[in-house]
Every structure is written in structure tokens, then in C-alpha cells.
Amino acid sequence: AHMDTVEPGIGKKAVFQEDGRITSDGTTVLGADDAAGLTEILGGIRRVLSSGKPHRDIEVLLPIAEEVYTKGTRVFDFSKIRSKEAYVLDLSGPVGSAAVQAPSLISFVLTIHGKAAHAGFEPEKGIHAVTAAALAIALIRGGTATNIVPESCIVEGEIRSYSHEKALSYMEAVRRVFREEAEKSGGSLEDEVSINLVAYHTGEEEASVKNFRRAAKKLGLSGELTETFGGSDCNTFA
Image 1 (spheres, rainbow, N blue to C red):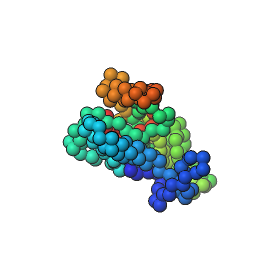
Image 2 (image 1 turned 30 degrees about the horizontal axis):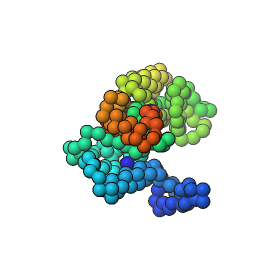
Image 3 (image 1 turned 90 degrees about the vertical axis):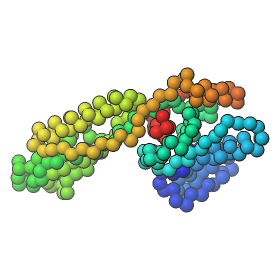
Image 4 (image 1 turned 30 degrees about the vertical axis):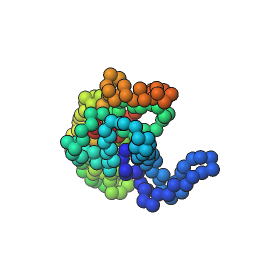
């Protein structure tokens, strides 16, 4: 379970409501993502140790920088870990369920470079970067004034897929379309692509899944297997 939270996360204060809910005081996030996971891990270990019962070896990894596309675990030295199974407590939903699939996530910044010109006096001398980008836009910002042909257009977006190969092919298709439209207009394309997460799927025959279901059944829980379209440190572990 990761130690970082989304912003604003400095000076967090938990408030216990009369109906049993725990909230923040409204000035920061609560940080339940992923302080709830940290609490469950530490509380669980405390219960096991205080019970005096024999147990398997336990290794705990509390990463940083998960919220910025698992940058913490991506630089972790996994030779320090002996475990063959891992459970990441970083998902909302009914207690007793677990996700066994998550997507690849590729983010991109595409900058189309055109040519600036005054829109009222000599627009024909310009290359309109926004027009070139209009076929596929996620988030757009460009130009330095409203009465000019903008010389640049920045398009930001991301691609998610349960198939890493499909995610890569979609990214290449997006890049190709933008490059073609930029060149048709006489402009050029500059691209920045980051593969932040790689998709995984944990099969039902895996020991980690069987052990999870066995524990859930013992506790009278469903043991339901689901999927998530968000990422976590589990992508890196896999």
C-alpha cells in the first residue's frame, strides 16, 4: 500500500463523524487512498503477531510516488523481495473482492508546429496549428492571442487498454493521424509519449488468487474477482 496521496495532502486531519464515517476536515484530502491500505496491513500484522499463531513469512512494501504512475515501485530493487505472491490493498469496492486485471496506460503530449500570421491582414501566410489538430483532440491550448493564426497547438491525452499491444497500436495510430494532418498543412509534429503502466491479468489458477479465495470463504466473504480500469503498484509488481 502506497504512502503518498493526491494533493492537497499536507496537514491531513481525520474527523470522526457521528454516523461512523471518517472524513477530512475539508482543507485537505482524507488520504484514505491509500492510508486505508496502510492501516489494514499494519493492523493485520499486529493481530497475527498478538495471536501467537504460526504464520508464513510476511514481507511488506510501502512505496512512495504511486499517484504519479507508480514511479516509486518502478525504481525499487526487487531483488530485495523473496515473496512470490503479493496483494495490493489499493482498490475501492465490497470487502472480499479483488481485481485481477488492470490496463496499460500510455500518456502523450503532441505538439503541432505551424506558422503564426495575423488573422485579419495576412492569414494566408500562416499555418493554422489548431486546425491541423482538430481531428483528434483531448485537451488543447495554443497561440498567444485571439486575432492570430496560432503557430502551435498542444494536445494531451492518454490511452488505456487491457491489451498492451492494443494500447501501443492505438498510440501509433493517434501519432500517425496527427503527423499526417500537420504535414498536410505544411506544419510538423513533435511528440512525447510515456508508457506509465503495463497491463496485467492474474489467472484464477494462480496461487495468489486461490489463497485469496480460500481466506474469503473462511471469513464468509464473496471472494469475487473483478477488474479495474485504473492502475496501481500491482501493475509494476506483475
